[in-house]
Length: 122
Image 1 (tube, rainbow, N blue to C red):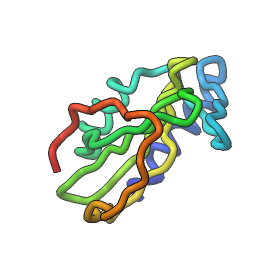
Image 2 (tube, rainbow, N blue to C red; image 1 turned 135 degrees about the vertical axis):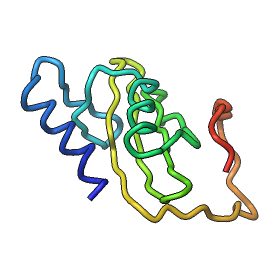
Image 3 (cartoon, helix red, strand yellow; image 1 turned 120 degrees about the horizontal axis):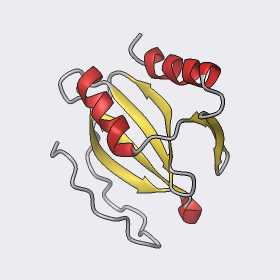
Image 4 (cartoon, rainbow, N blue to C red; image 1 turned 30 degrees about the vertical axis):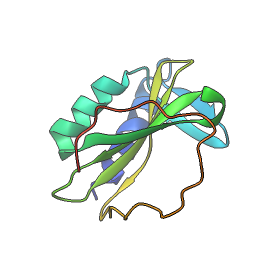
């Protein structure tokens, strides 16, 4: 049930505050987003679900950044997108039972280095 909460909050916010909520397209992903910083949303998820950012990646075309928030004790997770151009934050997906996999033996090389994060150690 936890995973329905952020979606319901975003949907209600979009319904009751249509002037603030916007439909955002990042690549092929369409989301309803709110004008909120990633830090503010991260603080909310830390307080409500115990989830903290553990990683991030730049969206192709440098339109935004995806963040993975994780609660290591409960294994609940949330993927959040931050649109750099519009300064909007969007909950993309979330769920339970996140599993950390071992590193790939032969990962594909990055074309462009991803900025280092100061997230929580696993």
